[in-house]
Amino acid sequence: MKNALITGINGQDGSFLSELLLEKGYNVYGILRRKSVVDYGNVEHIKDKIHFIYADMTDVVSLINAMKISQADEVYNLAAQSFVATSWEQPIATAEIDAVGVTNMLEAIRTINPKCKYYQASTSEMFGKVQAIPQDENTPFYPRSPYGVAKLYGHWITKNYRESFGLFTCSGILFNHEGERRGKEFVTRKITDTVARIKLGVADCLELGNLDSKRDWGHSKDYVRAMWLMLQQDEPDDYVVATGVTRTVREFVDIAFKKAGIDIEFSGSGLDEIGKDKATGKVLVKINPKFFRPAEVELLLGTPKKAEEKLGWTREISFDEMVERMVQTDLALVRKEIEYAKL
Ligand code: NAP
Ligand code: G4F
Image: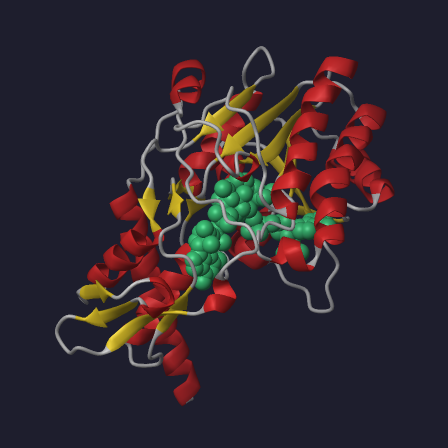
C-alpha cells in the first residue's frame, strides 16, 4: 500500500484526486490550513478516509513535519493561491505560496525522503501571451499575471530539482479544468451558479468581464488521472494536459443557459454588449468593467498529444457533459438553498 500526500486536498482537484487514490488503495494524507472554523471543503464527504495534517506552503517546518508523518511515496502539490484576479491584489502572498512554497515542498522531500515522487501543478497560464497556437511542451512561456509568473518559478524549480538532485519530479501543464466542485469565483462556475439562480427566480442578471476570452476547458476528474499517470512512469517528465478545443466565455454562457432551457441572444459590443432572453426580451447578461483584468490571457489552446501517447491518457467527460453536470448540480444546490431559507 502506497502513501500519498496531497497539498490543497480540500480544493477542486484535491478532492477528485483523493477519490482516485483511495480507489487505488493508497493511504491518503492531506494538508489543511488552520482556519477559525474547521472546514473540509470538497473532501467533507470522504473526510473519515483521509489523514489530515495541518501545514502551510509558506512554512517549510510544517512541510517537513508532513513528510515525516505521512512517509509519503508520492507528493501531489496542488496547493496554491489559484485565482488569477486575486494575484494582482495579493502578489506577495501569491509568490510566497505558488513560487517559494514549491521550493519549501521540494526541500522537505529532499530532507526526509529523496526517493519520493513529486507532482507539480503547473498551468497553461504560464503561456499567457501565447507565442504559438496551439501550445505544447515546447512552446515558450510569457506569463501575464503575478499568478502566472509565480507558477513559472514553481515549474522551473521543479525541473531544476530533477536536474540538480535527481529527484523524481514532474510538472503537469494543465489547461483550465472545471466541474461541480469549482470555486464560484472562476468564470465557469460563476456562470452555472448564476444561470441556476436566474432560472429559479433568485437572481436577475449575470455580470461578466471579457466575453471574448478563449479557454480550453476540460473536467477536473479526467485531469487528476493524468497527474497520477505521470508519477507511475519510469522517468520523470513534463506534460501538457488539455482537450485541444478552445471556446469563448460567450459560448460557455450560451450553452449553460441552454442547459437550463433559456435561449440567449447577444447584441451590442464592448461594454454595451448584452444578452437577452429570446423568449421574454429580458436582459440576463451584462458587462461589468470590474471583472476585466489589468492584463488578459486572450487565448489558450493546448495539445494533449504527448500525454495521450506516452501516458495513455484519455478524456472521458466531454465539454457538453461537463456543462450539463455543472448546471444540473447548481440547480439542485440552489433549490436546496431556497428550501432552507423557508425553514
Ligand atoms: P483550488 O480549488 O483553488 O484549491 C487550492 C488549494 O490550495 C485549496 O485547498 C487551498 O486551501 C490550498 N492552499 C492555498 N494556499 C495554501 C497555503 N498557503 N498552504 C496550504 N494550502 C494552501 O484549486 P484547484 O482548481 O483545485 O487547482 C489545483 C492546483 O492546480 C492549483 O495549484 C492551481 O493553481 C493549479 N491549476 C489549476 C487549474 C484549473 O483549471 N483548475 C489549471 C492549471 C493549474 P484553502 O481551502 O485553505 O484555501
Ligand atoms: O475562470 P477564470 O477566472 O480562469 P483563468 O484566469 O483562466 O485561470 C484558471 O485557469 C488557469 C489555467 O489556465 C489556472 F492556472 C488558474 O488557477 C485558474 O484555475 O477566467 C477565465 C477567463 C478569463 O479570461 C477572464 O478574464 O474568463 C474571463 N472572465 C470574464 N468574465 C471572467 C469573468 N473570469 C472571472 N473569474 N469572472 C468573470 O466575471
